[in-house]
Length: 174
Image 1: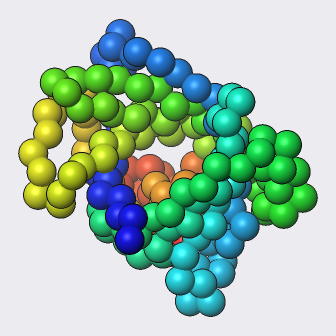
Image 2 (image 1 turned 135 degrees about the horizontal axis):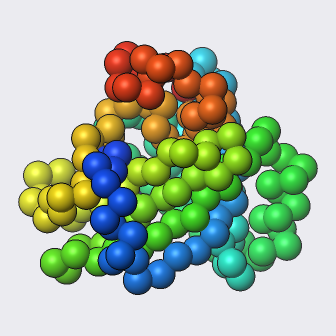
C-alpha cells in the first residue's frame, strides 16, 4: 500500500523565494469531490492534475492528518485536460515552487484565481516522527485543518474565507 506522510505549513516570510530551484504551474480538479467526502459517501478523493507536459490521476484516503493512503497513476495530458474540463466541479490553479534545504525538498504552493493570496509549504516525510529542518520562513503548521487541503479549496476558496478562518480560528467542513 502506498502511503503519503506530509506536513503542511503557512509561510512566515517571503525569504523562501530566494531559494527556489524550480517552479511549475499546475491545474487540478477532483472527480470525487469535497461534498462526497464530507457527506461520508466517499472514502477517498480522486484528483486529476496537469503540470506542464505531465498529467496523473491521484487517489487519496479521505481523512485528516499527516498520514494518508495515496496512489498515483500517469495519464495522457489530453485525457487529463478533458477530465478537468468535463468531469470536475472547479479547478485549482497554482504554481508549485521547490525549495531544497539540508537534503529535504519543500513544495511551496502559491495559489491563483479564487485562492490568490494563499501560499502553503509541504514537506513529505519518511515517518510521522521524522525530524526535518525548520527554516525561518516556515510558519504555523496547518496539517490538521481541512480548509487548507486542495479539495477543500475548491469547495470553499480562500477568497470566501472569513477573517476568523484566515487567522486560524476554527475549521470548515470540506
